[in-house]
Amino acid sequence: MHVDLSTAAALEQVAAHQPATPSLVYGTVTTSAGDLARQVRTLAAALARAGVAPGDRVVHVGRNSASLLLTVLACAPLRAVAVPLGFRSAPAELAVLLDRCEPRAVVAEPAHVEAVVAWRGGPDVVRVQVDDDPLAGTPVAVDGSWQRWSALLAGGDPGTTGGARADDAALLLFTSGSSGRPKGVVLTHANLWWSAVGADAAFRTGRGGTTLAVAPMSHIGGLNGLTLRTLATGGRAVVRRAFDADDVLHDIARHRVASLFGVPAMYAALARSPWFDSLDLTSLRTALVGGAPLPGSLLRRFLDRGVPLQQSWGMTETAPACTCVPRDRVRDRGTTVGLPLAHIRLRLVDPATGADVDEPGAPGELWVSGPQVTSGYWRDPDATARAFPEPGWLRTGDVAVRDADGSYRIRGRIGDVINTGGEKVHPAEVEAALEGGPGVGACAVVGLPDDVWGETVTAVVVPAPGTVPDLAELREHAARVIGRHKLPRRLVLVAELPTTGTGKVDRAQVRALASVADAEQVPAYTQREH
Image (cartoon, rainbow, N blue to C red; front, side, top):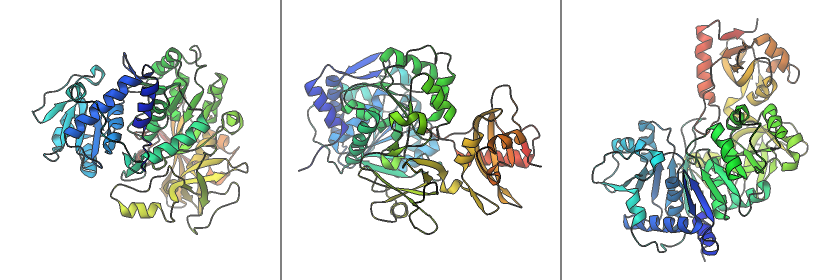
């Protein structure tokens, strides 16, 4: 017997028992569970008539929207694979991703139609333009090979088209590529379901409640962090196309938002908003943070407003969350990434010897095992073999330490470790030490080539407004908590830190930016230790 664990199947159950339940808010339109389930069935039937079959890939190109969610949900009864591609990709980058996933159908918002036309693709690819969403823009002129989204939803029999199997591929998501060429991560319906089981217990994301979806749903955190699970349990998803701090705060107060996922940069923007201290945030019981280290100052700012930020660690390959800080431990353990979730096993491994690292505080590569972990990468057996050196265990590439109480702290990526004079320095540790230093608005730490030390610790800092940070002062500040060999020897000031599509600091770009500034010896922007 095949079990259907898909979000679409769960939504059908909500629709059957509570059809009038508000499920989706997008723009000025609120869609009930009954209507949303009917739209999913109608779209699935239309795609089936167009030739989409089990295993086929169905791409959506655009921002967060109702059409993105419908596309993802409609793939399940077809046993097709949803591929949400981010709006940030340049046309050439989009063409590469389309070539790699070989879609049977592409749904595109007007802003991306030209890029899809330039890609061309095969003659049997079904092309659909979203033409009924004023937030996505005015439809553009296309030839007769394109279909209209509104027509797909308006016609056809919204009857059943079958059911997904637990081990069917549900999503194909391309990693952000911060550590190299993006890889296609395949996640099954079972992966997503088991992730939700752990999240329900850890984040109190049980039945009902409202989530605010503002992180990009082309990435796993924005899509399965909270959004899909909320729909599956009879809750309401308020979907916004993009993040705006003032709008988010008003949404929380207006819609009584119970859960929110974001990266630290998003929460920092909320804290800077003039509305942060005045609007009612008491409904927000789950404020989930992922993607980058959470500064202690930001944690305390939200605690002062009665909102405990729960930091979590995960990745696309784990669908996503694997750890979190328990809600009642946020005040004293909030800058860790917490404890493993249910059904997750973690271990630290010495990458040089392959031996397990058991000593508290000793760094090792984080390995993860559990039913929510991907089984591999899309058509890339070599990458899959490298990622799974032992059956069932995924090498994450993240360096972490385990505290005595079992909490984990992420120190950075293996490739980001700085080797200075034979000593290994983890950037995240230095960044945490620099936090709150004189004139530091934001910072990232990288290693730059050095004739004497091999690499030298370099702090790339965005100055706080009206300040000019000084290297000597920053070293003095950081020396209170880290050893002298870890202190930055160079300081580069920049206007902003480059980020990836998921909001993480793009260290490759930071390193390139710092290298240029250092090579040019711009007096106002570069300081060296003397």
